[in-house]
Length: 204
Image (cartoon, rainbow, N blue to C red; front, side):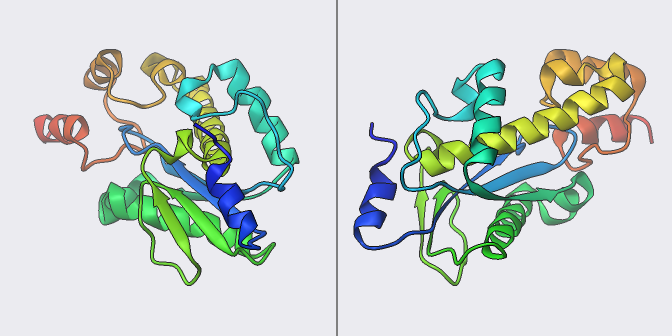
């Protein structure tokens, strides 16, 4: 799979500023959904870059530093309270639009490549299923969003070590559910998510 195929096709049409958009954090029980819109230079090369979930943490951190220093990017963050109000699908869309707007403050975006999700935009866009393993721009965005959200979880782990956030990153693992059952819910949980809802109902 040529990770540059979508970008190359657009460059051939004379399109210069292409944003790749991805999200991280739709599944966790706690914390925000984080998105990134990343515009790479046409001569960008980073060997081994792919979907952030397929990379080791060490590689992600290394790639993250290179990407943020060699691209134009924007971040969108929607917190748990808003996720509960909007639902995760709409919250993710909102966060993606925020990230795109951040980039538009810096450059005139001409096309957006989005991982899976269709967005209503005033510029052309392409929604790509499993885009983070098919487009270099989306792969870059997935790495940036993943590192930012993971770092939030590490910060939370320092404050609340009993919950194990550094290990599970907020996802509903057995150990995580056992921890919230034992110690209760702290600020930042998504109250509309099944395991959290169940604990809230049990403690009414």
